[in-house]
Length: 391
Image (tube, rainbow, N blue to C red; front, side, top):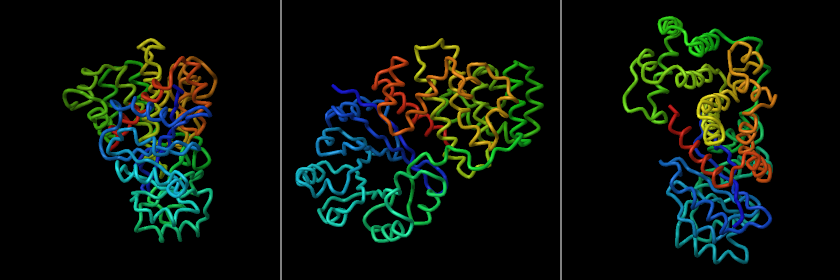
């Protein structure tokens, strides 16, 4: 059986929120659709609950009727090129679709007009943003509005994203938001600086009253911290009522990881919701990938490394300036600065999961001794975590 590694892209709406995730199955030259089915079947127990769509793409291989052997969850959406509905195997595919009735996203192509008349309903229509200009997207979105929800794929820049939204797209898929949107500031703003101060106090095990005094300088920090800790993603059996209560229940080490997330909430970037979701995903993914490969005492540091990997985009400040203000363990700083160290490989694999390069992912995973199944399952678990932590 051929190993199938997954990469992913978010679908971002005009409110800058990630409303769906797109998974691409990299089948390779020798892969078959049964390999895709096997890979998806292995994710049943870690599949994200709820109604947030999860799109499934087979990349250049294109999904066909054999993928319908997969018992797709209710929130799964299968991507198909319109041409697949009208080619030589089209009749077989149409019959299978009419039998199993999965949720579909049909990619708009020259055969789309004919494909829309074959009697297979689709919920989404995908448009390649590299193929159509703004005027064409506006026209196509208007013409197909009654046939499905318009989604733009392969969106590369923030300007392209805004153009797609202006053209009438409901969401756009890509990592256009992860690069800083402007020249970095030289210093942290007061709100960011106070969170760093609290972080440093917690990391140095300062007296609770000293940390509480720092928190009182910005009441919003305490509020946000308690909201994070009490979300479903944290999984506590009782509600945390105060910072002192949190220290007693969790201890300083665990509090440090949740305080680290607050630094991102001080962002003024318009894409902050999507950035925070991605930072949460990376944080949890790195922690999961390291399971059994490093000492348990380092899991929190790996989580923080992932959470801080987008600070330059979130805060609008160079990562060097942020790290200069913080007292972080050397392995975290080294990984964030690209200087190597024992966390670097985990961060590189997390970043590889966001690129449409199955070979790169396979090579990065092999360096850590991880199988495709282990890597894919960790991604789905991280997705469930990031979704649960949103508010």
